[in-house]
Amino acid sequence: MDWSLAISRNRDALRSIVAALFARTGMVKGGMLTTLPRHLYLMTLAILRPAESAVRRLIVIAAHGLKPSSLVGSSIRHGGWLDLPPWGGERREAARGGQAGHKAFALFDPLKSFDPEDFWDVQPKFESGFGLSKSGYSSSEAESNPRLDATLLGQRLDALRRALDNLPHQARRLVRHYARRDAALKAHKPTRMSPMRPGLPPGWRERRLHEVDDILRECHGLANDLLNPP
Image (cartoon, rainbow, N blue to C red; front, side):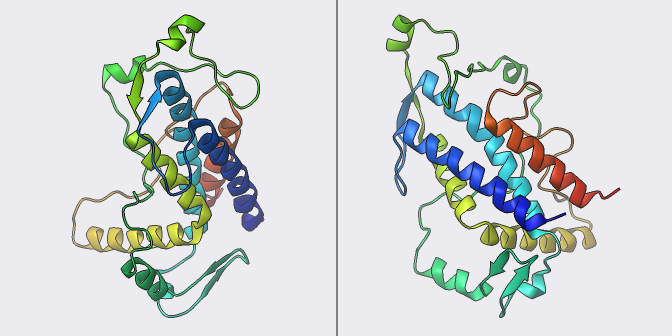
């Protein structure tokens, strides 16, 4: 399996989707969102959730085989694709405040919720092309559609963009988590074992509604094949 090609192909497809989301919401690089119309908020969330899950699985693939000891003091090559700079360079960049104020990309799937309200989420319907319909709203209802607080949504979208722009950094973050996990297990302390939750990932849809659904299916399958070889 050419893992480098698989990562690159899916990363590029996801970057195109994220760029379209930025354009659709009016968000700019380094900026933030304040509010969005309800239908646009739901449309963005319907694409963002599976995209985040797909990126987490790309990070799992990128981090496979890396060791914490190899992250310090020397460059690393991973299957000819990940060319990782020294870990110390990240610390110097952080000290200069290069990523100050930004939300870090969440490496872990949120645990499953059993709140009954979560089973009644509005699911926007996709139009032809990139966009979504207004989830059954009439044109008059859409005009009076309330605006929702999109601050956290914008932070997640920005974190997703930055993760895709620097997957090697995210892979290093995950490897450091693995080191902390192993130490916690030795000390008999509770810890998350895997960034991927059991079962289907967040944002998974049985019926394909958007290109992101195909990408999530492929990334989920690749990560499972890598971690659980036949």
